[in-house]
Each structure stands twice: as C-alpha cells, then as structure tokens.
Image: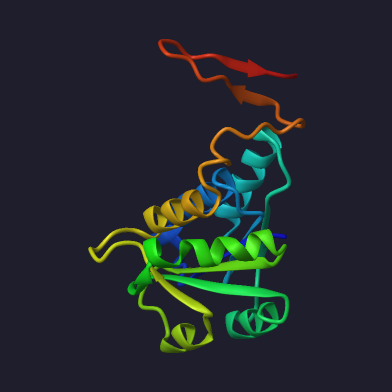
Length: 177
C-alpha cells in the first residue's frame, strides 16, 4: 500500500514556497511520494535534503502526463481529488480509509490553480475539505491526518540524523553525526 500526492499546476517561481510546503506536508503526514507535472530543482533539492536529515524514503518525481499517470494509477489503486466542490470528507473518509485496509494504493490529487475539468471525471472520489476558500496545503494536511487517524504525526525513522522529542517546555533535539 502506498499513498502518493500528485501536485497539479506548479508555476515555478510563483509557487515554489507553497509547492515545497505541499511536499513537506505530504511527507510529514504519511504520503510515500510527491509527483509534480514539471521539474523544479529548488523543491526537489529541499525535499531530498529533508529526507536525508529527517529520514525515511519519501520520493520526489516528475510525471510527463498527469492524465496518463492517473489512468495508469487507477489500474492499481484509487484516485482521490481534493476540492472545495466534492463530497464532504466527513461522509467519505471511512470509505477511502477502507482501501488502505485492503492494501490498495491511493493517489491524492491537488491543484494550485484552476484544475482541469477532466480531473473531476478521472477521480474515483472528489472530496471537499470544507466549503470555504483555503490552501491545498491545508486540504492535504487535513485529508492525510484523517486518512491515517493521526498515527503519522510522531513517526520515527531509524535513518534520521535529526529527531525532535516532544517536550512541554523546551526544545529537545537529537542529532546524529
């Protein structure tokens, strides 16, 4: 079972920071891979450095055709598109979580700008994270947290060089050479 995030609509310099935050959020909250529709060396390098220091095997990839990727993915898993216009996450999260229990892969599609209409038709589920304007970072964070029921918030990676230990009043950071 794998959870992948497909980021549609990355616009270079304009979206560099938000796209980096999308990738960091995907990694931190349990996704295995982030897919972009165009290369961005800054985002790739930022994510690879985080993985090197904080551990895990989160992947950054670029796909040539998002449509083809979604169509191929549907042969092995379920496609969930996060949007303001879909079904309520509260009413569908149990159904989607069941795919994890069945060991099926999940592709989460998020957009940064106007999402092509075809995405709505290709997705198995169009899921709304509320009905008010918000960012794709927030939508992804809420979705992944609900999908994994909060279990990914404090994961340990054996290969991590940096580890933060929760503490009530002080910073506790362990660094391995």
